[in-house]
Image 1 (cartoon, helix red, strand yellow):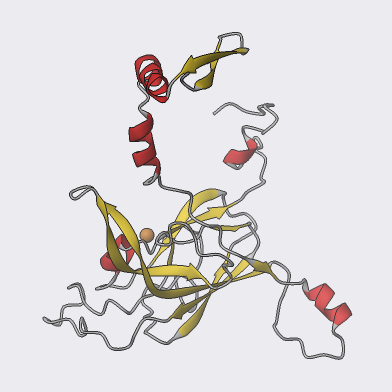
Image 2 (cartoon, rainbow, N blue to C red; image 1 turned 180 degrees about the vertical axis):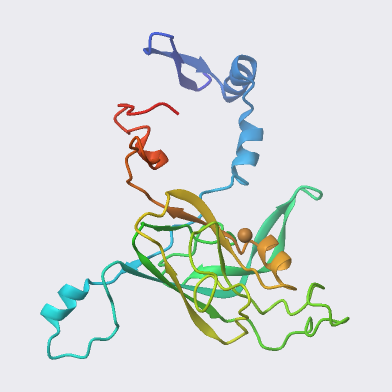
Length: 266
Ligand SMILES: [Cu+2]
Protein backbone atom coordinates (compact mmCIF):
# COMPACT_ATOMS: atom_id res chain seq x y z
CA UNK A 1 0.00 0.00 0.00
CA UNK A 2 1.49 3.39 -0.93
CA UNK A 3 2.44 5.72 1.85
CA UNK A 4 -0.22 8.19 3.02
CA UNK A 5 0.73 11.87 3.14
CA UNK A 6 -1.31 14.38 5.13
CA UNK A 7 -2.15 17.69 3.50
CA UNK A 8 -4.03 20.65 4.97
CA UNK A 9 -6.50 22.46 2.78
CA UNK A 10 -6.95 26.07 3.83
CA UNK A 11 -10.34 27.70 3.63
CA UNK A 12 -11.17 31.35 3.33
CA UNK A 13 -12.67 31.36 6.84
CA UNK A 14 -9.20 30.71 8.27
CA UNK A 15 -9.87 27.09 9.19
CA UNK A 16 -8.03 24.18 7.60
CA UNK A 17 -9.01 20.62 6.90
CA UNK A 18 -6.71 17.60 7.04
CA UNK A 19 -6.78 15.18 4.07
CA UNK A 20 -4.57 12.28 3.03
CA UNK A 21 -3.16 11.50 -0.39
CA UNK A 22 -1.03 8.53 -1.41
CA UNK A 23 2.46 8.29 -2.86
CA UNK A 24 5.29 10.79 -3.23
CA UNK A 25 4.54 11.27 -6.92
CA UNK A 26 0.97 12.16 -6.02
CA UNK A 27 2.16 14.79 -3.59
CA UNK A 28 4.30 16.42 -6.25
CA UNK A 29 1.54 16.16 -8.87
CA UNK A 30 -1.07 17.71 -6.59
CA UNK A 31 1.22 20.52 -5.48
CA UNK A 32 2.24 21.39 -9.03
CA UNK A 33 -1.36 21.17 -10.27
CA UNK A 34 -2.91 23.15 -7.44
CA UNK A 35 -0.27 25.74 -6.64
CA UNK A 36 2.36 25.56 -9.38
CA UNK A 37 4.66 24.30 -6.64
CA UNK A 38 7.40 21.90 -7.72
CA UNK A 39 9.11 20.35 -4.67
CA UNK A 40 12.21 19.39 -6.63
CA UNK A 41 12.69 22.86 -8.03
CA UNK A 42 11.95 24.27 -4.58
CA UNK A 43 14.63 22.07 -3.01
CA UNK A 44 17.15 23.25 -5.59
CA UNK A 45 16.21 26.87 -5.09
CA UNK A 46 16.22 26.64 -1.29
CA UNK A 47 19.86 25.58 -1.40
CA UNK A 48 20.58 28.96 -2.93
CA UNK A 49 18.19 31.01 -0.84
CA UNK A 50 19.69 34.28 0.33
CA UNK A 51 19.55 34.45 4.10
CA UNK A 52 19.55 37.52 6.29
CA UNK A 53 23.06 38.78 7.06
CA UNK A 54 24.25 38.29 10.65
CA UNK A 55 23.70 41.01 13.25
CA UNK A 56 26.86 42.79 14.36
CA UNK A 57 27.77 42.10 17.98
CA UNK A 58 27.79 45.47 19.64
CA UNK A 59 29.07 46.27 23.12
CA UNK A 60 27.51 49.21 24.89
CA UNK A 61 29.86 50.92 27.33
CA UNK A 62 28.92 51.73 30.90
CA UNK A 63 27.79 55.26 31.57
CA UNK A 64 30.34 57.73 32.88
CA UNK A 65 28.29 57.94 36.05
CA UNK A 66 28.47 54.18 36.51
CA UNK A 67 32.19 54.13 35.83
CA UNK A 68 32.79 56.85 38.38
CA UNK A 69 30.90 55.02 41.09
CA UNK A 70 32.38 51.60 40.48
CA UNK A 71 36.02 52.28 39.60
CA UNK A 72 37.02 55.25 41.73
CA UNK A 73 40.45 53.81 42.53
CA UNK A 74 40.99 52.24 39.14
CA UNK A 75 42.19 53.89 35.94
CA UNK A 76 39.27 55.11 33.83
CA UNK A 77 40.08 52.93 30.86
CA UNK A 78 38.50 52.27 28.47
CA UNK A 79 37.06 55.77 28.48
CA UNK A 80 33.46 54.72 28.11
CA UNK A 81 30.93 57.52 28.31
CA UNK A 82 27.18 57.48 28.20
CA UNK A 83 25.93 56.23 24.88
CA UNK A 84 29.19 54.76 23.57
CA UNK A 85 28.94 51.60 21.52
CA UNK A 86 31.81 49.46 20.32
CA UNK A 87 32.16 47.04 17.45
CA UNK A 88 35.10 45.55 15.60
CA UNK A 89 35.23 44.34 12.03
CA UNK A 90 38.09 42.39 10.52
CA UNK A 91 38.73 42.73 6.83
CA UNK A 92 39.98 39.38 5.65
CA UNK A 93 39.78 36.80 2.91
CA UNK A 94 36.77 34.50 3.07
CA UNK A 95 36.90 31.16 1.28
CA UNK A 96 33.49 29.70 0.40
CA UNK A 97 31.32 28.69 -2.52
CA UNK A 98 28.91 30.66 -4.72
CA UNK A 99 26.37 29.06 -7.05
CA UNK A 100 27.20 29.52 -10.73
CA UNK A 101 24.03 29.49 -12.87
CA UNK A 102 26.09 28.97 -16.05
CA UNK A 103 27.39 25.60 -14.86
CA UNK A 104 24.63 24.84 -12.32
CA UNK A 105 27.19 24.07 -9.67
CA UNK A 106 29.00 26.06 -6.96
CA UNK A 107 32.32 27.73 -7.64
CA UNK A 108 35.00 28.06 -4.98
CA UNK A 109 35.75 31.71 -4.38
CA UNK A 110 38.06 33.77 -2.18
CA UNK A 111 36.67 37.22 -1.50
CA UNK A 112 37.45 40.15 0.77
CA UNK A 113 34.91 40.44 3.58
CA UNK A 114 33.96 42.33 6.72
CA UNK A 115 33.83 39.80 9.55
CA UNK A 116 32.59 40.55 13.03
CA UNK A 117 35.45 40.02 15.49
CA UNK A 118 32.89 38.98 18.15
CA UNK A 119 31.07 36.45 15.96
CA UNK A 120 30.66 33.14 17.79
CA UNK A 121 29.69 31.07 14.75
CA UNK A 122 30.65 31.69 11.14
CA UNK A 123 27.61 33.09 9.31
CA UNK A 124 25.81 30.80 6.87
CA UNK A 125 26.66 33.13 4.02
CA UNK A 126 29.85 34.89 5.08
CA UNK A 127 30.22 37.41 2.28
CA UNK A 128 27.68 40.08 3.13
CA UNK A 129 28.69 42.27 6.05
CA UNK A 130 26.95 42.22 9.44
CA UNK A 131 23.96 44.46 10.05
CA UNK A 132 24.74 47.28 12.49
CA UNK A 133 21.89 48.63 14.61
CA UNK A 134 22.34 51.74 16.76
CA UNK A 135 20.27 54.53 18.28
CA UNK A 136 20.15 58.32 18.06
CA UNK A 137 22.41 59.90 20.67
CA UNK A 138 24.97 57.11 20.60
CA UNK A 139 28.65 57.46 19.76
CA UNK A 140 29.62 54.55 17.55
CA UNK A 141 33.24 53.43 17.86
CA UNK A 142 33.79 51.07 14.98
CA UNK A 143 37.29 49.67 14.63
CA UNK A 144 38.42 48.26 11.31
CA UNK A 145 41.22 45.70 11.42
CA UNK A 146 42.70 45.34 7.97
CA UNK A 147 44.11 41.81 7.96
CA UNK A 148 44.66 41.57 4.23
CA UNK A 149 48.25 40.86 3.10
CA UNK A 150 50.68 43.71 2.53
CA UNK A 151 51.99 41.94 -0.55
CA UNK A 152 49.71 43.33 -3.24
CA UNK A 153 50.33 42.90 -6.94
CA UNK A 154 47.62 45.41 -7.75
CA UNK A 155 49.71 48.22 -6.23
CA UNK A 156 50.44 50.89 -7.41
CA UNK A 157 48.01 52.04 -10.11
CA UNK A 158 49.64 51.17 -13.45
CA UNK A 159 48.84 54.56 -14.97
CA UNK A 160 49.15 56.59 -11.79
CA UNK A 161 45.45 57.46 -11.97
CA UNK A 162 43.75 57.34 -8.57
CA UNK A 163 40.52 56.19 -10.21
CA UNK A 164 42.06 53.19 -12.02
CA UNK A 165 41.46 49.91 -10.19
CA UNK A 166 44.48 49.34 -7.95
CA UNK A 167 45.66 48.51 -4.40
CA UNK A 168 42.77 46.16 -3.65
CA UNK A 169 43.97 45.46 -0.09
CA UNK A 170 43.67 49.08 1.00
CA UNK A 171 40.35 50.31 2.28
CA UNK A 172 38.41 52.82 4.38
CA UNK A 173 34.85 53.17 5.64
CA UNK A 174 31.88 55.30 4.65
CA UNK A 175 28.61 55.36 6.60
CA UNK A 176 26.29 56.16 3.71
CA UNK A 177 23.53 58.61 4.54
CA UNK A 178 24.39 59.41 8.15
CA UNK A 179 24.30 63.01 9.35
CA UNK A 180 27.82 62.93 10.80
CA UNK A 181 31.10 64.78 10.38
CA UNK A 182 33.00 63.94 7.18
CA UNK A 183 36.38 64.79 8.74
CA UNK A 184 38.98 63.47 11.18
CA UNK A 185 38.25 59.95 12.43
CA UNK A 186 34.56 60.28 11.54
CA UNK A 187 33.13 59.62 8.08
CA UNK A 188 36.37 60.61 6.36
CA UNK A 189 36.58 58.99 2.92
CA UNK A 190 40.05 60.43 2.30
CA UNK A 191 41.67 58.05 4.80
CA UNK A 192 43.44 54.90 3.65
CA UNK A 193 43.44 51.97 6.07
CA UNK A 194 46.31 49.85 4.78
CA UNK A 195 47.00 46.14 5.39
CA UNK A 196 47.93 45.29 9.03
CA UNK A 197 46.50 48.64 10.25
CA UNK A 198 43.64 48.93 12.77
CA UNK A 199 41.70 52.18 12.90
CA UNK A 200 38.85 53.32 15.14
CA UNK A 201 36.12 55.34 13.44
CA UNK A 202 33.93 57.55 15.60
CA UNK A 203 30.41 58.37 14.48
CA UNK A 204 28.52 60.76 16.70
CA UNK A 205 24.86 60.05 16.01
CA UNK A 206 23.00 63.12 17.19
CA UNK A 207 20.03 62.74 19.52
CA UNK A 208 17.77 64.16 16.78
CA UNK A 209 19.12 61.91 14.01
CA UNK A 210 16.30 60.56 11.81
CA UNK A 211 15.61 56.87 11.97
CA UNK A 212 16.39 55.00 8.80
CA UNK A 213 18.01 52.17 6.95
CA UNK A 214 21.42 53.29 5.77
CA UNK A 215 24.43 51.28 4.67
CA UNK A 216 28.19 51.19 5.08
CA UNK A 217 30.87 50.33 2.57
CA UNK A 218 34.48 51.15 1.60
CA UNK A 219 35.03 54.43 -0.20
CA UNK A 220 38.69 54.39 -1.23
CA UNK A 221 39.28 55.25 -4.86
CA UNK A 222 40.83 52.33 -6.73
CA UNK A 223 39.52 49.53 -4.48
CA UNK A 224 35.90 50.47 -3.72
CA UNK A 225 34.25 48.70 -6.65
CA UNK A 226 36.11 45.44 -6.18
CA UNK A 227 35.53 45.36 -2.44
CA UNK A 228 31.82 46.27 -2.56
CA UNK A 229 31.16 43.74 -5.32
CA UNK A 230 32.87 41.15 -3.12
CA UNK A 231 30.25 41.75 -0.44
CA UNK A 232 31.94 44.41 1.64
CA UNK A 233 28.73 46.32 2.32
CA UNK A 234 26.29 46.11 5.19
CA UNK A 235 23.06 47.54 6.47
CA UNK A 236 23.26 50.29 9.07
CA UNK A 237 19.99 50.84 10.91
CA UNK A 238 19.29 53.85 13.09
CA UNK A 239 16.34 53.07 15.33
CA UNK A 240 14.22 56.07 16.13
CA UNK A 241 11.56 56.88 18.64
CA UNK A 242 10.47 60.41 17.75
CA UNK A 243 6.71 60.72 17.61
CA UNK A 244 5.37 63.09 14.98
CA UNK A 245 4.20 66.52 16.13
CA UNK A 246 2.50 69.41 14.29
CA UNK A 247 5.82 71.22 13.95
CA UNK A 248 8.16 68.27 13.26
CA UNK A 249 8.30 64.93 11.52
CA UNK A 250 8.42 61.76 13.50
CA UNK A 251 10.27 58.56 12.79
CA UNK A 252 8.56 56.20 10.40
CA UNK A 253 8.49 53.43 13.01
CA UNK A 254 6.22 55.63 15.13
CA UNK A 255 3.64 56.12 12.39
CA UNK A 256 2.51 52.52 12.26
CA UNK A 257 2.51 51.12 15.76
CA UNK A 258 3.07 47.36 16.14
CA UNK A 259 -0.27 47.14 17.93
CA UNK A 260 -1.99 48.25 14.76
CA UNK A 261 -2.89 51.59 16.37
CA UNK A 262 -2.01 54.13 13.71
CA UNK A 263 -1.32 57.59 15.02
CA UNK A 264 -0.95 59.06 11.53
CA UNK A 265 -1.44 57.92 7.98
CA UNK A 266 1.43 57.34 5.59
CU1 LIG B 1 27.82 55.31 -0.27
